Image 1 (spheres, helix red, strand yellow):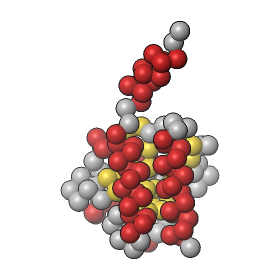
Image 2: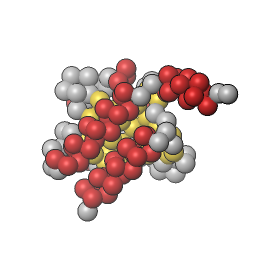
Image 3: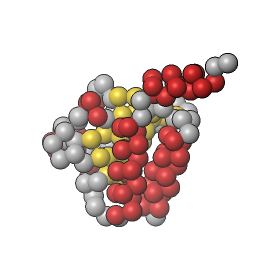
Length: 132
């Protein structure tokens, strides 16, 4: 059932990213990410994951955050969700797992979309088009 939720979440993030109702920013520090709830991933950042800060992103939404983080070496992408009222974050999908090829495909699609958007250029073009 978590796979179904992950797929729906990623699809919705793609939709909201395309229509610019959610804005992604570069991750500046792993300190933004709370510890994971899953024992499977409890040492993920410390032992396996070397965050590629130039290519990892987060988006704020209703007080919570979505993170799209990428491993500097393996180039694996991980979607992490956290909310202010929880002391932990949760991994919803990762290309590390390789459980569901549809989820992995959508996660890569989301990452490529986010990585290709330049909000400054988009805002400039929108302003130009909408100007009298």
